[in-house]
Image: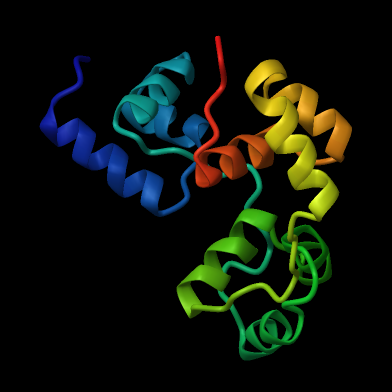
Length: 148
């Protein structure tokens, strides 16, 4: 069998009804389920291995989300049995801003200004205890460029 528009439509329907790749392979008569999984990937029909048991957000979940803005996404995710990505996404969707302030101290800014140009983000990150991506973002925001 060759994939065509009708077969793709059938695959989309079966996938959206939570059929497994093995069940879909049986439907099409394939012995190897990799044929189905490769086609699914080409069609961008991807399964989320981190799907939580709570597929929908309850009023209780949203209440907890609103009352825990002082916690990190990871901490809230653990409480709600969801991924941190789901927590972050729902916070953005609801327009909730984190109350955690992660401001740069004067000492950290001094290290950034004195050493970023010469040594780069990795070096400054080690000295300030911040992630290299935070250092890079702050340097860009401050208009500091690395000398190469």
